[in-house]
Structures are given as C-alpha cells and as structure tokens.
Image (tube, rainbow, N blue to C red; front, top):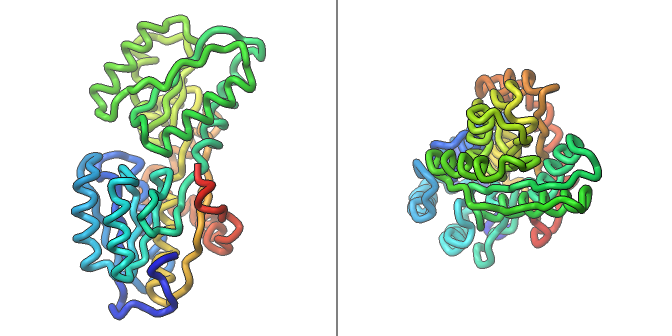
Length: 333
C-alpha cells in the first residue's frame, strides 16, 4: 500500500482516524464504532472519528484534509463518492500517511490507495435473491421490483446486479423490474415505496438495496398489509423489528461493525509497530437475518459492548490471517 513503510509514526502514541460516510445513518455509525473497537483491541493508539452529518461528498473532502493534520498514523475512509475523494486521498498518501478504503464499493483510479475492506456486494445480492427464490415456487411467474436508495453508488449497484442475475438464474420466467431510484432522504424514500407498492399490488416481492429501503419497506408492508414479500439490507433497529413482525422476511447485514473493527485494528498495528498493511481487497463477510436469528441479532445490536462481545471471536479470526481474505483490488465488486 502506498505511503506505508516499516517506520512508526513520530507521534507518541500515534493517532489514527476514520472518516465516515455520515454521522446520522445506523450503518455508518456502526463502522465508526467498529473502528474504535478494533483500535482499542490493538491498543497503543489514539483514535479520532469524523464525518459529515449527512451524505455530503464535498464535506468529506474538507474533513479528510483536516483529519490528515492530526491522524498521521493512518486514516480509514468510507467514501460517499469514491471518485470525488480520489485526488484528496492521493494527496494524503503523498504526505506519507497510510490511507485505506472501508466500504464504498470500490477504490477510484488516481487515489493511490491499495487496500480496501469491503463486502462482495454482488455475492450479497445473490444471497438475498436466493432467500427470496426459496420462498417462491421454482416455476413462479410474475414480477419482482427492485429499488435502490443510492443508484450509482458502487456497493449498492453490485447488490442490485447480484439480485437481478441470480433471480433470473433461479426463476427465468420472472419479470425483474428496476432498480428504481427510491431516494436517500427518509421521507422521500417512504413516499416512493408507497407509490411503488400501490402501482405493483400484484408483485411477488419488493426488494431494496440499501438501509433506508429496509426501514421503509417494512413500514409500507405494515401500512398496506402487503401480500408481497419484502426484504433489503440493514440491521437498523427498525429493520430488525420489521423482521420480527414479519413485514420483512429477511434483511442482509453488511456487518459494518466488523469492517470498521478490522480497519481500526490494522491501522493501529501499523501505526504503533510498523506492521505492514496488505494490498488488495479484503472480502468482509455478510449475514442473513431472518425470523430464526432476529432475536439473537437484536440482542447483539443493543449496544457497542454487546456487539463487541458477540463479534470479538470473529474479529480475532479475521485479523489473525488477513491474507486468507484477500483478492486482487481490481476484482472488487
């Protein structure tokens, strides 16, 4: 990875930082909490967390430059728009500060970043398609509508592609519609899913690609007593409640706390000891949440301490041999 040799930072103890996509959404706070927890497991560093209040790529650029004045030990960046922060990331790397991408779906050309921790979004989409297909007859006809609260965001686009591809593999008689732009704003997103539900009362399923999709799909399914299946990607408390009440038959967790924890641990180890950072795409796991495990996951998500207690062994396993989880960066999807 560019900008990471074997020398320790001159700070004592060194400071590492994390730039979140935002400070308001559940998934983004999970990553920040995980980053702090991973750094604390490694020990020997100071941690600074920052991020815009909402999805704001230009504000991320400003915050990255500010963070680089203090977090000389390394920075994890979860980019709203990878292309927008590519040049600023390259500038930080050029200062000799290690930078890694955490989530965001891809590393944009020109960023000089050589390491990313992210799910296989395409595979997560296939997973949601499989649990959907398992609920339907194999020769089912009709339509499934897919919505995405952030079209053109690489991670969500890969989820959509995985869903579409696998649904048509499993059930070639289906009509798969979308992705429809459901909007990032929670109020807009809710209104969009209400319109989609009204226009597609005969749909077999409505599937979302993002976190706010999950929350509002559950709400719309309850409001309209939907006969269609609903599922998306989130472990926001409202999404978990939606699974508990049967309004979402499944939701996929991208395990953002784990991604953040691996990033915090790796940067802390590098900052305090010069431990070499890997290069490539660290493929982080996901998790299917359904009726059978929703209570367990709800208990896990109750607080940062319960998450850490439940996930500590998995964090240790992921960081014990990171090379097991590496693929070439240009294969990220």
